Image (tube, rainbow, N blue to C red; front, side, top):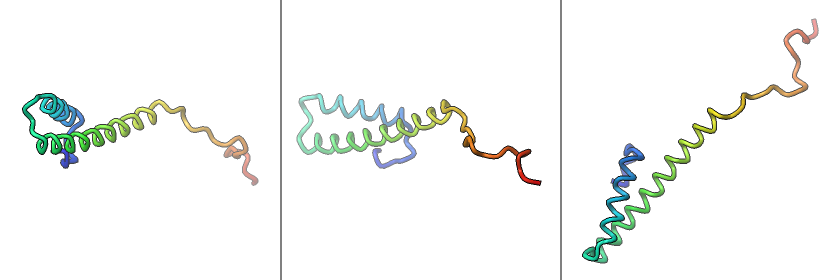
Length: 80
């Protein structure tokens, strides 16, 4: 699942929670635990990337409008 780039944040987080629960049980053998840990790390990276993208979108919406430079000429200031 960690390789699927179309997986939503919510689905990735849900899978991550399942992995944590599986790793917390005493009956997970070492090989399986390592595989789960690796998948979990990939999901963490994916979730962090999705969160960063969402934050950038929010920052873009909240950014003040761009102002022209102070020395820019107005349309009526062009030489005739």
